[in-house]
Amino acid sequence: MHINPTTQGGNLTDAESTRLLEIIDLHRSYGATVALDGLSFTVAEGHMMGFVGPNGAGKTTAMRIVLGVLAPNSGEVSWRGRPVDRATRSRFGYMPEERGLYPKMKVHDQLTYFGRLHGMEQHEASESARELIEKLGVAERADSRVEALSLGNQQRVQLAAALVHRPDLLVLDEPFSGLDPVGVDVLAEVLKDQAARGVPVVFSSHQLELVERICDDYTLINEGRVVASGRVQDLDESLPDIFRRETEVRA
Amino acid sequence: MTKWPVVKLVASREISARGKDKSFIIPTAITLAILVGVILLNVATSGEDSFTVGYVGDEALPIAEFVKSTPDRFDTEVTIDSLSDEDEAREALEDGDLDGVVTSDSLLFNEEAPPRLEQLAQSAYADSQVQEELRAQGLSDVEIASALSPEPLEVELLNPPDPDQAQNSAIAFVGVLLLYGQLFGYGFWVASGVVEEKATRVVEILLSTIRPRELLAGKIIGIGVVGFVQLVVIAGVGLAAGLLTGLIDLPESAIATVLNVLLWFVIGFAFYSCLFAVAGALAARQEDLQATTGPLSMLILGSFFAAIFSGQNPDALIGQVATFLPFSHR
Image (cartoon, rainbow over all chains, first blue to last red; front, side):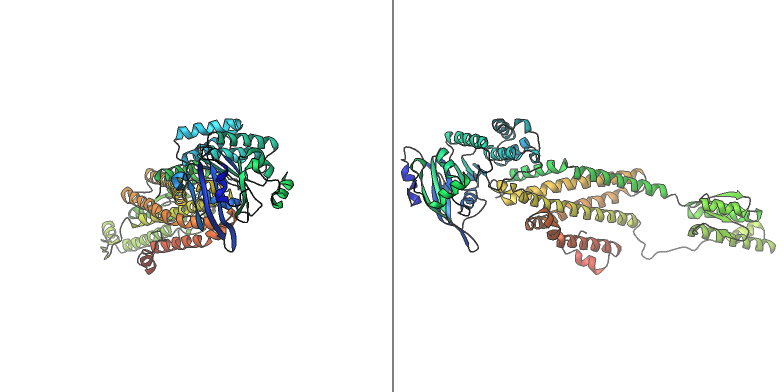
């Protein structure tokens, strides 16, 4: 276990992978509340990383900063060694914790729209939306309004919205929360597929057990700092209680 | 740097989402129906310059005929009808079959005396009395006729009003009314669109993809285009109906006024929609919108009344001051 997050990549030799996403010393406060206090971590090409921590640890704040929805007080996010800008971010896929879609828009129209916002042509976005709708098993609801879908199906469409533009990086905030065991398996498969394409995948979760099962790497954070990080096979059994307890409660 | 293709995308989503919405289509249809209805009603009731007058007894006939023959210069058409007695006259008046009744020594009306008709009858009666008097004095009919119709005085106006003014100010009034409705209605759409994106959290995905100002510009342009098209349709139908029925007889200035209204919609909407977007951003839920748009509604209402007041008193100070303020319509 590496306490210093900047040496986390030391687990991976350069031959194994390239670091694509680097989070460097992020600080962010909301008034007097410190959400991020020098957070740093990296994600390598084709790796799936679980981002674990208790409520209020700063996971959502960190993800919002990566996606540019929120600005850090200080620190930097870089992609392939360069600070991220609009053009780079339009190649990122994001599933926010607070799920959100246009309730009155039809599923296929909506996904096509998101694809186009990310810079795809109409036919390209439409085709990609159709493929995803089929792959995620909501083909028969393609022309339904989102508000008419069950919560489980809305969740699938939300995932499709993060994938429709074939992103270079996937950031998902608590993607497994509220899913039944079948849903968890389907989502895990989709994420593994993405990682196999070389796309780095970062997702936050309360469930350490889940992260151990499907991720390559993990980063544990608490109070806005990295507590531990590394490869999941090296996950120490003597982790701080706070993470284990969370796992038991959730499992 | 704002990317216009993105703004266009957002705008076209707004247009297709709003244009298909029942809350757009149904009110538009109702507005058009009311507009055409009002114009037709106006045309149907504009024939009130024709009267049917009854007379009772032979003594009243000369007065009735006088009423019928005098009106030429007033553009008033009168038909006369003989009645057997006063009871029949009262019945016909109450049924609305007659506008007035002349007897040998009185005039009968139902609820009120139409001023023009009463004036006509009174002067016809006066003329007939004078005529009788003159005849008794031994004047010939020709002399009587020339004595009774002297050359009228010539009228000269020092500051003649613009002959188009009545119609122009009527159209301007309707225009201000429409502007008020469009600015408020579509401005409110912008505010509730902003709240919708916040309340459904879709804004987080949007803002991870596009800039806030691209989102705002697209929303304002999209909703503005829907409002503009609706205004064009309403104005077009109104103009066409007005011209076809002859209610509007000055096409050039009517069209100029309509174009003016359209121009002011574009400018006014650009201004107010941004304020409405702020009101939307201040509200967390649709329920809060009433509170956050309140001051804005007062501002629009205030400028609406200023516009109406200035329309009636074009030289008043308020009109001159309002000209310099961005939030007043005209």
